[in-house]
Length: 150
Image 1 (tube, rainbow, N blue to C red):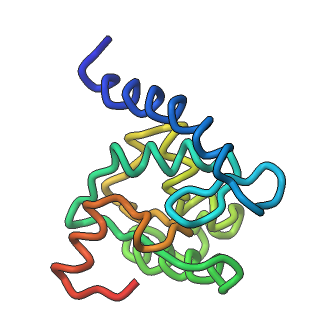
Image 2 (image 1 turned 45 degrees about the horizontal axis):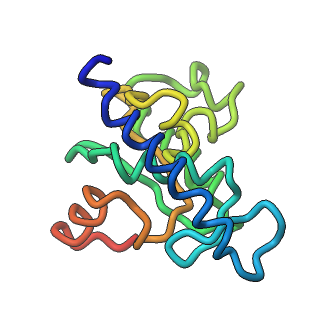
Image 3 (image 1 turned 180 degrees about the vertical axis):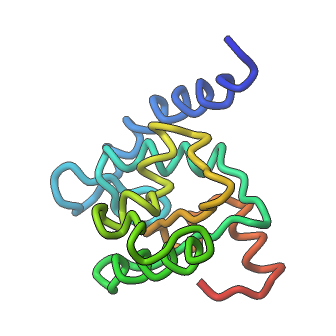
């Protein structure tokens, strides 16, 4: 096993050990939901959350959009993408003309599992619906050190 794969293997093992415990303590959540860190998540998203918490290290150049669901997040992603790429593209070349903002500004907890190093240095933005207390430590520390309000 390569050195880079070791953390992901450890995350997979931790996920497999954690799931039976979460399903037993789910309480009154809807079917298919699991309580993790005081919030309910579908099983398909939970693996990504654990992987991001264990492996994602925020860089000073990262732009991470954190927003609650159903709060105009798609518009926020489109604006962020347009601002970050305004020097690279003109209004006739923008991928926003043919792609949804969710494809251009990926969700960390969903896309990080599929493609962990999924970061383009020219487009360092990503997004999440995770509550602040469930964000990776590197993001929480950066927010507190830089007095950012998420």
